[in-house]
Length: 321
Figure 1 (cartoon, helix red, strand yellow):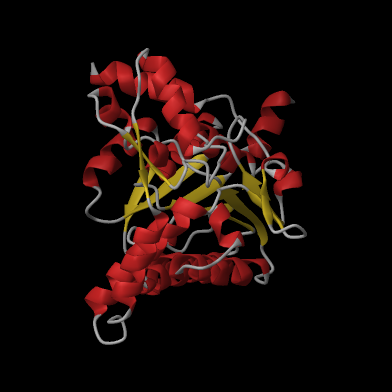
Figure 2: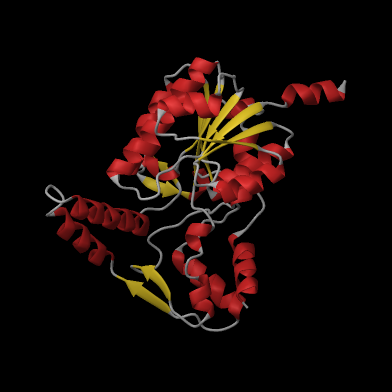
């Protein structure tokens, strides 16, 4: 009887964006749950495919921007119970965001509906709750389309990833200063590990409380600032970590300068958007935004998982020795 019940829980899952760090973690979480997993990959992802196949996933190669390729190469005329999209543009520019964050997901949604898929799980981002950037508007446009699709949906909006908070660790270990914007306390987040986020995403399949919902999610608290990260490294290294403060106004100046030419130059437009992205992450917290107060609220930001940023830093420091 128990084996029959377990069989009913197993689903046939197509995962888009399986070559990224989060995508690979989601594949691992799905396989640990005994689901049948098909990973949709670019043809240039052969090395990743070898690892995923060894783990037990089937890999299919195609182009998420091409709706014909999605149906022919990924779906192949057979239904999936679940489609999970971990797609995200890498540059954040308006052109790439429209192509990946919106259009590729829209193509996948149309193919999923045509194939009889019942549940679409989207990995989005918590920053879309205050959209000031091109990629945020593209993500929101697809979120709205998914909600209106008639499919069961789960829209997961994670806070900061460990990777995004780790770029300075090895440099600090070598004696370089820790860079912060402003006073180092302009922003806070509850970072979540790849493994914990992947488990949260995979559990959306069988947890009805995560169906037809937008799901902000962070890792174990408390919420931390960049200055808290510097203090953490100070404690772990057992020596002073110098903090270098960078003016937010400088990024605003760069954004304004490039914006002067973005109407006539695609190069200026891209540089202006990069500067706006940098300024956004330097000034906006990755926490739930209280719409009544207009403030980011750590207490309203759900926590999930067991992995901590401190543990992640410890691993980075150990492997760098």
